[in-house]
Image 1 (tube, rainbow, N blue to C red):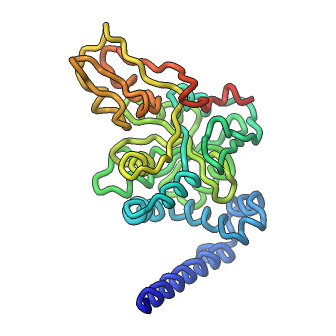
Image 2: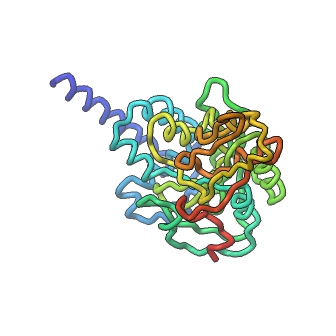
Length: 313
């Protein structure tokens, strides 16, 4: 028991030291500079309460050292989480699966989407708001999930931060590994990732601003959210609101869709692809990978409402 207490004190002291270092960086800035403009904007939007309860500091750490943050979460924390930890992770850091069209609609948004509750779309207790000014500012940066793997899928610069002040924050704090995208470049990236068999997802995190901040282009090999869901049972991803459907008259039973599906929701039985309704998240990866066009997505109200900004005005 005494050994446990000593270990606990050591961990608390290390955590306090880390917090102190981060506070110094926040107050003084790197290389003696004052706070970057995007950090000041986030501090103003977050408000005093979020700094007093350390959630804003948590958000700063996440955004400033995202590779290190996700590496620790994926490789050291997630494998050892109990039921409460898995639920906490899903409630505070989660995503909505997007179809190709829904992802492109966010990028091509031409008007403002005000702050609003997405309770019927995002089935989690926190971080369900969206604030977008159209056309949104877009910054692409290195995928922390892919960089946490020994042999990551390529390319690695595929995570898109959407809107302000997040887009500026990433550029200012990761100038060597991020870049701004035009609308055309963002659409090209989405389509290239879709062709590679990677799914699109809109991510929400409660730290700092409680709202949507990124579109990730996830591969089943590297994505921490998919791994947390499929391997560790943490339901971090909500269905797009669609489900895959197979046309038996066109399907050749090639099993390409089975290999491509991130959620193990489709397989070949008697030389025909069969969709498992419960497992299907409506990502559309199988649609894009099917060589004969036998698979399509159909709207299913039992899967929840889609996150379609065209319907949120």
